[in-house]
Each structure stands twice: as C-alpha cells, then as structure tokens.
Length: 501
Image 1 (cartoon, rainbow, N blue to C red):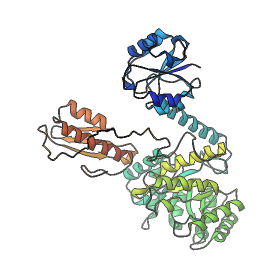
Image 2: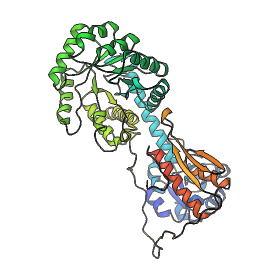
Image 3: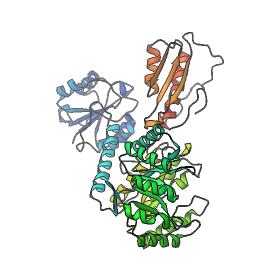
Image 4: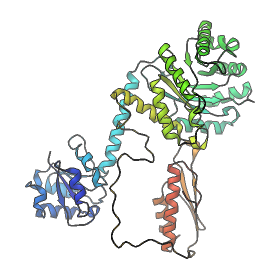
C-alpha cells in the first residue's frame, strides 16, 4: 500500500524518523503542520514541489494520504481531484509509525485523529474479547444471571458502608453510582446499631434500583435472618459464631454464603467451618481466607489463599482488596491493579471494596478494569501490557517529543500588580455530582450570570462571549483556574480557587 504523509517544515524530521520507509513524506510550504489547508495540499502535490520526497510516485499512485490530526479543513474535494483517500493522521508526529502500521487494516476517519481512533478501536476489540470469554466461560456458580468463578472474570463487590443507616434516596443514589462505576454485586453494610427492619428496608430499596445481586454484610444472626426472609442473594459472613443459629435457614433458602475463619484463627478454621455448613446442607459457598492489611501479615494471608485454592479449586474465593487500599496512604489505582493480579494468581472470584475513604475513591472502576485486564492477560498468556485497556492515569507509555530551550529565551516573571477587571470577578467552583457517577461540572459565578460546563474550554468561551471578562490578565487567570478545576474533576480531587493543585 502506497502512503503519503503531509507535514510542515517544523515537524519534517520527526515525521521522517517516524515513518521511515513505510510512507513517503511531502513537506508543505508552512511551518506548522496543523495549518495545512486543502488548497495548499493540492497545490503541493500537483506541483510536486519536493519531488525527492515523493520517491518518484505520482499523486494517483497513492492509496492513502495522511494529513496532520489537528488540521480543520474539508479535504473531500481534494480526494475527488486526486482520486485517493485523505484521512486525519495522529495529532503528534511521533505516533505516525504506529498509525501507518494499521493502513489497510482499519478504516481511518476524516473527522477523528488517527491516534484517538486507534485507542477506541483497540479498547473496543479488548472489551469485545472480554465479553466473548465471559459468555463462553464455564462458571463454578451462578448467582442470578451472574457467573462466578471458573473461567469467568473476577467480579467486583462494592460495599455501601452503613447502608442500613442511610435514607432511601441516599442509598439509592449510592447504589446507582456504584453500578455505573462497574460493580457486579452490591453489598449492604449493616451498622452496629442496625435493626432487622433497617436491614429489610435497605434490601427492598436496593432491589428497586439494582439489577445485580445483593449481599448483606453482618455476623448478627437476627439481622441475617431478616435479610434471608427479604430475599437477599448472598450473606456475609458465616463462622462458628453464627452457623448454629442461621446455617439451616441459609440452606433452606438456597442463598449463597461467604464463609470465614473464626476470629484470630487460620485456614484450618475456615476449612472446618466450610465442612460444617456443607453438613448442614449449604451448597452455595464462597470461601474468604481473609486478606490481611500490609503490616499485619499480608504475605501469610496470600499464602493462605494460594494453598486453599490448590486444595479446594471448586470453591470460589472472596478477596478483600479493600483491606489493603483503605489502610495504605498510596493512590489506589496501582494498589488495586497489583492486588487484582495477585487475586487472579490465587484463583479469586470476587474482588471486594468499600470505596470508603477519599483516597480510595474510584476503586470500583479500577478493580473492574483490572479484572478485565487479567482476563485478557490470561487469554494471551502474557503480562497485562499492551492489551487495549489500561489503568495508566498519570504515567504515560510513550513520551511526547521534548524540546531544548531556544537560545536567547526570556525568563518569565510574575507581574508585580494585579488590576481588578472592570467587568467584575468570577468565582470558580466544582460539583463532582457523585450521586449518579457523572463526571461533574465546573461552575463559574459572575454577578451577571452563573455558567456551568464540563470542561475549561467551554466555560471560558462562554465567559468571553458574554462579555464577563475585559482584560487579558483576567482572561489568562481564568484560563489557569478553570483548567485546574477541570483536572480536579478528572482526578476526583477537591478544588479551591487560587490554591495550588
């Protein structure tokens, strides 16, 4: 396939290094590649202003012409004139090597830069693969329509902490948010002061808004009894302290039971408790060897999981990742991803998180993505790398091209004075809109208007178009602050105007 890449003078060397011998390069008479217009491209090709770049090919010999991903013109007339396809390439020249390798395998776009298109394509392929594997996999157990264990994806159980103490609206909002983030199971945490009526109300509220299985989190036999009477799917948890009182009811209702060892005991206690519930007639069992936090014997607990799974591979395992993420002052993304990998290695079926503290917000989505990564990793028999989906948030796989500081550059200095804008001040705030899992909004409050938007660009454009800013320094200041607010929403952080981000 013959490919031509159009660029400007400044990006020429980067483009040549990126495409090497995979494409010809045509340098248009403009410094900035993004300023290439349909007329400039057509004139350059017809005149063959740089014949060496075209390697002897005539325009009608090209199957594809890539123009920079940031150009804004309509090249449809040029396509007709030249008789070949013209597509948007990547936004950055260094991505051309990757993009060109997909020529002939993928239909590129005239409106979406190739780099963005490939991200969506690879992600789509990856998620389709996860869905196919899940559909075809054999499970150890079904809870409603959900497959659990076996060759299926690890499922994320999200706990609504103190669910029995929340009013109906707040509980419903929390559950909707968790499901939107990717929760496969909703766990209702019962507070120490909860009554059986509180448990029943929480389960009935959850049933109205949740299409996924519901579990109740308590050891109290009285609360478990009411939960079973109300039709809960899973009970957390059973051990020797409550099996005698509640075990037969669990067996009679056919509910699934998470079995744990007795307090302070090891895996032998877990095995004994499982044998007891099996003798009672409980057949739907999930084992929880208990993941200890870092600093409290975590290595030993991982060994417990590994050994238990080797001995009882037919019993799904409950893996409490939240025991780690909630008790370490580290960003949850990497912790969740790493422990999801460990969970996959020891044969876990459920990944548990309360997503309770501020630092652990996002854990549901992180665990869901990590569980999908582990499915793809197993399918490819490889590490969870370059598989189409990832959990890279701050770090990047491929660094953009750096530049050196030009000779004679002027050192920037902060202005000594600040003049109040005659058009008035603008107060900037954010509303994360946690209740329904949405991305949140930026709020810009002026004495004459209140503007709400999803990103800094649209809010600033509206402020300017409405004449709410009249000085360059105020416009520049608002741009900086609005971008900080946008980043705060993106990374689920708080925002305060004029504070460092």
